[in-house]
Image (cartoon, rainbow, N blue to C red; front, side, top):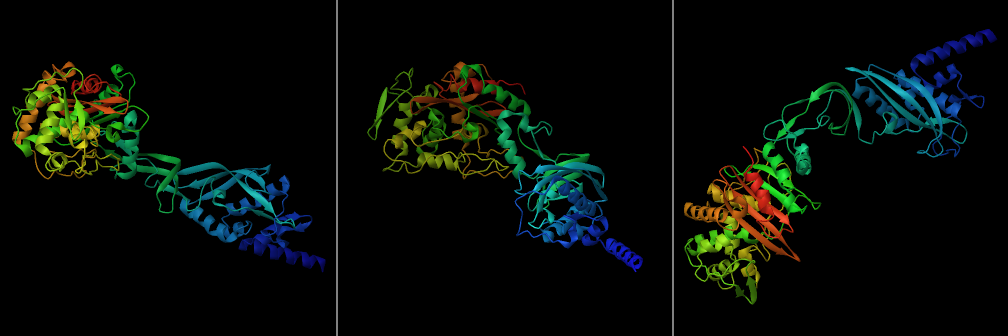
Length: 549
């Protein structure tokens, strides 16, 4: 009778084992706790023991859990966890996502109480997965819990599958998903990585995140993907892919020159920013800056000082019918709306000054007198704003790639002394080097081309093209500034250059500005704390204009 009973039990156990039942597995292998088979006890997650299971029992239980996993008995494997309903589909997705051929485990070692899961014992092990393309190995670990009656269970979370895997993420093998190989943002030459330039790190990151890359392939390997199938992290590479590329308008040679220019020793480490444009197309060729307050080249919103006299002159020509030879007396001081204005040191008074002469020496009182007289009517001081918008394209436009820029501002409804201060780039008038480079480009090109950093980016247009008469007058006036006026100490000797300097008061210091163009590019620079435009920003602009093609 006993012999018959033993045979019957043996046959029954074999049948259950083929069916993949975990209870049968434990009976056959004799896995017991305190002399009782584990299969006779069900883990109760509501009655957890505060005492971690002994190392030996935790390790042995983990080996059996991993043995079932290796056999891909997913329901049986899941039944040994504290969340079978979650674990079973997760294990199936693991095998499906990796297109798993085989998985094995080794070096199963208990490491004592877990520092992450209270009341659990940590058991570490190595995983080796055979997937399309090759073999992948990684270390992992589980936390083994026990209930108050001594039943054991693997504490389930996604990191059981792979350390650090979080909710909604999964593993995939084969062709790596989009995002697994980061896109490369390059200069216009198609090769130079924008991230190689210190000033362009944030710009490159924004473009990489927002612009659509082209070409390339992702290669093959293993990656973590999010719920949408987008690559989060590459874990293993079997065949190296080629990064997709986003090509920008940046000129690598000019960008290198700009990076050096903003660190010119004459600036004495003052924060500086510069932008260079192709004035024919509006394409941004270089953006460089120093200082710790962000990119002042495209976001340094400051009063532009006398560089604003370019737009003031255009308004006087277009809206008041003046010409470079029109009268613009330069006096020591002038009062407008009860506010007294003075000239910069070194500007000599000239009561017979013309508009062109006042522009060349940057006489403040010349422009306040003419601007306040000709462009402010019955308290309406919107003429400068209108010129900036209608002719110079001032507005809310994007350079592309999600790159943040700060809009210039010339309010249409200024009051009091600001009605006069706006004509010399003070008061509530603000601008960036990006905008002032565009102002110079509009003069040289005889038309506005919105700055862009991606070749296919949409370009806003100005409501009205600058007249050839106005553009010609301004080009002549800016040429005089470069050859014999306030910019001459830095720019004289350079062919085909037109320029305008600016020095703007800000609190207890001044900021230096200079914008200019030559036959190739337009440039603007700002130096915070610069004593004057020519003696600060002038050094930056010269280095860019003098850089070889």
